[in-house]
Structure formats: C-alpha cells, structure tokens
Image (cartoon, rainbow, N blue to C red; front, side, top):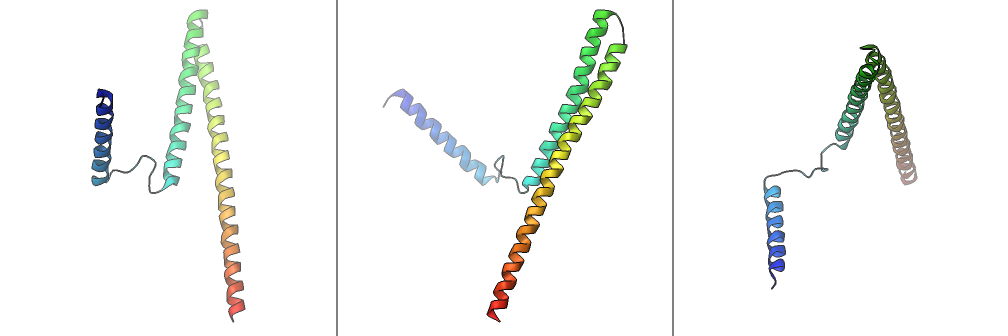
Amino acid sequence: MKPDDLQANDLEGRIAKARAAGERHGSAAPSGGEDPGIESAMSFGLRAGSQFVSAVVLGGGLGWAIDRWLGTKPFAMLILMVLMFIAAMANVWRSMSKAVDVATETALASEKAAAAGDRATDEIDGKSS
C-alpha cells in the first residue's frame, strides 16, 4: 500500500468515528430541524435585518465620504442615510409582501386539498351505505 492509501483509509475511519459519536450524542443535522417554518422565518428575519442595517450603514458611509470631499459636513450624510433608510424599508416591505403572498397561496392550496379529501371520504361513505 502507498502512504496516500493509508492516509485515505485513516481519514475515512476518523470520519466514520466522528459521525458515530455525533449520533450517540444526539446532535441534529444542520437542516434536520423539527419545524422548517421556524427556520425559514428566522432566515427571512435575519436577511431582512442585515439588508436594512447594511443599507443604512452604506448610506452613512457614502454620505460621510461625499461630505468630506465637498466640505458639506453632515448634510450629504444625513440625506443619504434617510434615502437609504427609505429604500431599505421599501425592500423589506416588498420582501414581506412576497412572503405573505406565498403563505396565502400555500394555505389556500392546503384548504382545497383538505376539502377534496373530505368530499372523497363522503363519497366513499355514501356508496357503502
């Protein structure tokens, strides 16, 4: 055997041991949460918050640079921060509207499926009588 083969076998053994130890300790897989809706909501909230903060910080930084270049201290910074704040709010609002539309469509589809299942059950019950 070559030394590379020994290292590959050793690595595979170590990976298998680590996986077995993880299963014994009950660690969950990164995407194996109990409620995917909570994970989705958390990711949406973190994404919206980071977009909001980064837009305001970017507006402040650009405004500060423009103020320093033109010598118009706090005016450009304040104006750009306010504009970026408004843009961030519009972006979060648009993202939230899309999420609400998707949730509404999903709820309507599940209600239709449940109603179709109830009708099928009623038909089966009616035929057996």
